[in-house]
Length: 114
Image 1 (cartoon, rainbow, N blue to C red):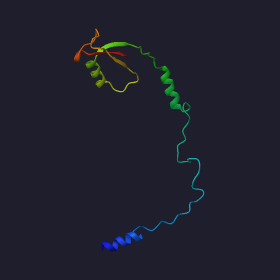
Image 2 (image 1 turned 135 degrees about the vertical axis):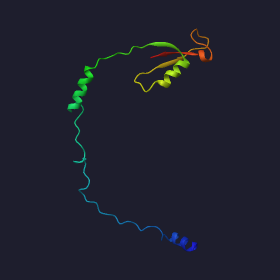
Image 3 (image 1 turned 90 degrees about the vertical axis):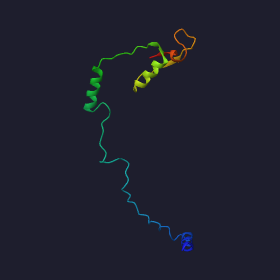
Image 4 (image 1 turned 120 degrees about the horizontal axis):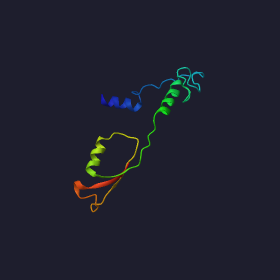
């Protein structure tokens, strides 16, 4: 029985017959999306956009001041674990162990700029 199956596989008897190609109608494709897609107004023209922009302008603006801190690395790691994703950046420079504000191990500190 195995020899017969092997012969049929070699002859291509077990493969499915090729599908006949269907002719496509010329009118099926069109360059625009058609009525199935919602028509969206440009940004700022919709009433909700205008209301949102008005609310943004009414909010008080706060400027973040650039600050420089000397902080122990252990405290910095605790703050990083608690902190979520924020929209400002922090630059961190490790102080030497011989620095006046730093030390060895748990006393190691860094300068950070917020």
